[in-house]
Structures are given as structure tokens and as C-alpha cells.
Image 1 (cartoon, helix red, strand yellow):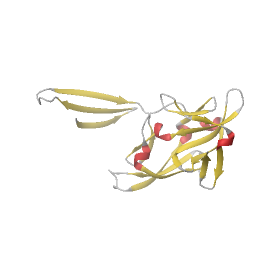
Image 2 (cartoon, rainbow, N blue to C red; image 1 turned 135 degrees about the horizontal axis):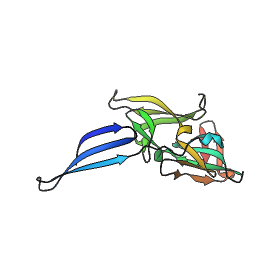
Image 3 (cartoon, rainbow, N blue to C red; image 1 turned 60 degrees about the vertical axis):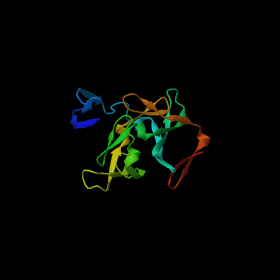
Image 4 (cartoon, one colour; image 1 turned 135 degrees about the vertical axis):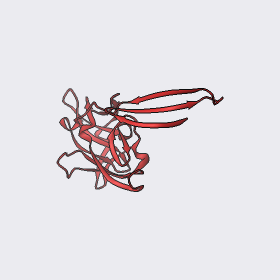
Length: 174
């Protein structure tokens, strides 16, 4: 498969490609569209005590309220929520940003209280890594105590209170 053009148009990433048939005589144009994640978001409205996991910094955990008023821990794999776009973290379903990111952590020192920072590869810019952050409150939501993200509402998993412990380097799940 030969990729001729990659263009970003509004909310769609349009990938135009030409598929050469085995005979070399037949060409088929193909159009693939992917929408970036737009819903759900604003997990901070109903979740507290969030952070990254100590041993898996691409996972976040938060203590979230359910619709009945109870509280539960939830863990979400952010690979289903974010992509590294040449050094910039953006919301996208199944973006698997961790393949090109290092040293990720929660950074609650900012005014957003949901800042997530990574050292991301920026091939087209410098070829090296650059620090970039994203406000996860604009990407992640709470669905009845479970963290969710993406246009397809990818759901994290619920944990018991006994499974979650804090350390100086992040949240530890047993």
C-alpha cells in the first residue's frame, strides 16, 4: 500500500491512499476517516484523587462518584484515548500514544488539576523528544463510577478500595 497524502481537515483525519493490485494495472483509491474523541469529558466534576499508576504511567486512576452517590476507584488505559501527533498529545480513539512517549506523569501543579505530561517523540520537528502536556478533564469522563473516554466511550475497569494504594511515585494497584 502506498500512502500519497495525509491531511487534517477539521475534525477528521483523512487518509488518501492508492492500493496497487497485484497485476500492477488496477489502482483503487481508498478514503479512511477517523474522528477524534469528543465525548465524554469533565471527570473532575465527579471524581477526586486522580493520578497515574506507579508501574504503568499510561494508565490513570481516579476515585469517582456513582449515580447512587457511592464512590469507587476506576483505572483507565489512556492508550485508548490519546495519540502522539508529532510531539503533541491529542484526543483520539485507539491512539496508542505510549509507543512514542516516555516519562508520563500526572502534574496537578497547574490550574487545570488534570494535567498529564509526557516526553513525546517529535520526528518531524526535531527528531528527538519534547515535553508536552494535555488537560485530561477535556478527554476523560465518569460513567457511573467508571472512567471513560473517546467517541465510542471506552470504559476503564472498577477496583475495590483495598486494591488501591498511594505511593510517592503514583498510584499502586494490587
